[in-house]
Image 1 (tube, helix red, strand yellow):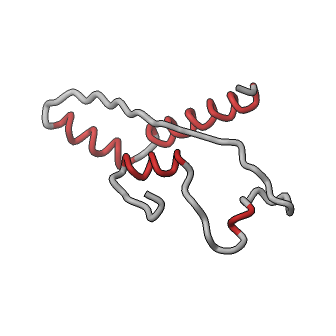
Image 2 (cartoon, helix red, strand yellow):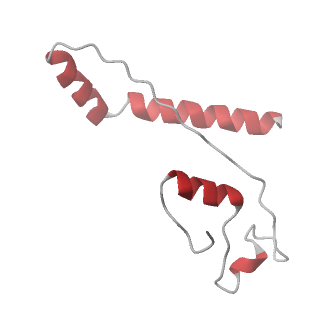
Length: 91
């Protein structure tokens, strides 16, 4: 993995962690649970995936087949939708 990409992934992880730790809503709910006499252990798992985009002739990062309004799902898209129990017309 490229070093710059590693750094960006670390920044993203820190940003997610920071946003959760600074959330007033999360803090309020955790406080309420503690007031009820419970200890709180919060463990979150995030899966972040990325693929290098292929550029079209215009170099704008969109896939060439986006121009006619039609698209198809990649295998990763289909797996993600299946995990969410969503079916697509490509299934």
